[in-house]
Length: 101
Image (tube, rainbow, N blue to C red; front, side, top):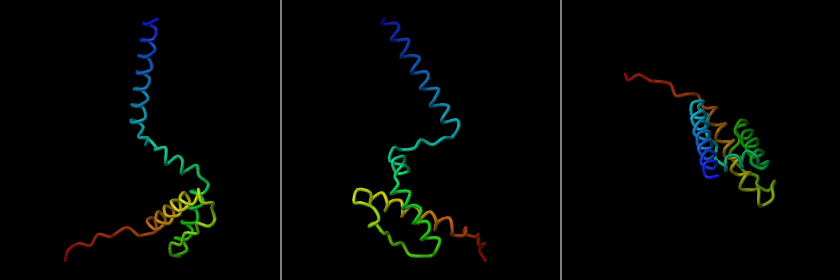
């Protein structure tokens, strides 16, 4: 019985190690649980969408948190800020190299 448990543990460790190496070799990022929670939140997604629309239309950042109940307002605010800032960052033209004169 002891050898069976040792064998099972060895196999589990080997599979875990191989999986870790496979993920690293593919370049996949591990996503934190908070990122997954935000991605699954309707309030967060709504905030990202509305923040992106506001930035693209040139409006200033004005977060309408009254759209969501109190427990979802932080998620909406985080999503709005992310959408707004990412949209502004992608809209900026890249800095051009100016050679010294």
